[in-house]
Length: 548
Image 1 (spheres, rainbow, N blue to C red):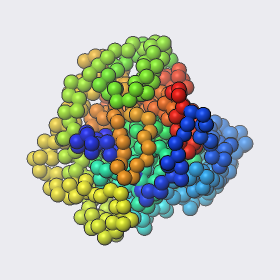
Image 2 (cartoon, one colour):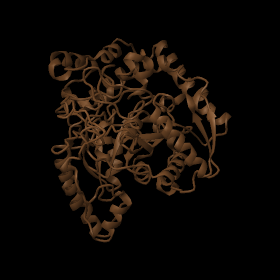
Image 3 (tube, rainbow, N blue to C red):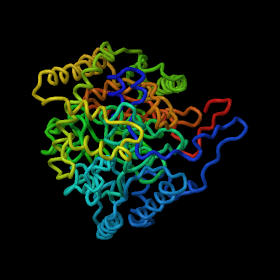
Image 4 (tube, rainbow, N blue to C red):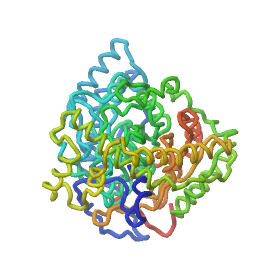
């Protein structure tokens, strides 16, 4: 969760707001100052890897031809995690590997040998954010309070992944409590997992709160990952890690078994290196689930093969609205955005400038909704899951008792504000929820799309990654995705370029249930621009006299 806090607080506080971080360990080169004469060198441990940048379709094809087994692929990723994440550049992206990963891979290999292939994910290793229940692993939200919390069952989306044949490789680090503990947090830090680093420049932020998912997939530690978002927590880390991230319509993917912030805005979604991979992963996790009433609305709207919507010519004839007020926070992002708009024109799209008449008017209401819903949802999850710390009140007390390990850099003022809220029957909550959704959705993004007859609205996702700073927190400059997050409507980010080697993404936003069209547009843009570049695991960004 990310820009919601950014908008509901004063600017100086908002800048500290991106997803939180863990037990911070400063990079050894944090004080290094690069010069134009000498570029930072890549870490040797980040060298050649047989499956770096290899997509799911290709992995599946190799297994189908008998050139590769799921066991060998899973072992290769586990070895990669040991070399890149635990040693070498030491990204701290994976908080735990699945002790049963190889056993799961062997089972998928046996099924393939017997002639049963479940689908495009069969035998493919994927990672999950560490706020998603997946047996036999811990689900902790990065907190030491839940360091021994073993859920009894899988989250619904995890069961769907396993039914689709995926191998659950492990869990990724995150901004602790999905960045809903403090307004001074550092993205990618959690007391349990440490500080996740950006593989493009190790002293730069991975954003968050799906920080580990972003860094892990950028570094080819797995084929793809599942992140979660309340406001920016899929889109922002995907953008700064050069990934494709899909934040679905709220209700398309079940939240059952996911540690919550807000049932009005929470959703899980795929993070991958290509639109094709993200579409495959989304296809596997959508669908109605009695454990999440919001998914009832997805009946007849969920598509179980988003991969089929990939169309290189998808921008031809499209009418794309540019959210100019979602720009202006960074010159590099603006320049990349202008190049992206020209690429879309060349691909046959009509580009028009648009505004959201209600822009930013939902900020205060959004924060109230999150505070109310966090208390209600977290208490329900902790009680239902049998966690030792079984309420927000008990969690606050745990953090106070363990402040040296849980709160060495930032406190828990958002926890305390949430605890002070009443029930969801209070008029203040009901009014805030109605106001936020109406201003961001019906009178905001959806009204603009309908009035201007748009296929989608685009904006820069966020600025290039900033330096990790546990003392002052995140240095967040701006974003273009907030309306879709608050409205509960879908958004897709795709790499659009880089600035001094630091990736930047463009975000496509549409009305509710428009994932098929957004994926089509995003794929056409990706194929036109091919903007993604693999990370080099540099100690710091190469700040030479020319911009990358």
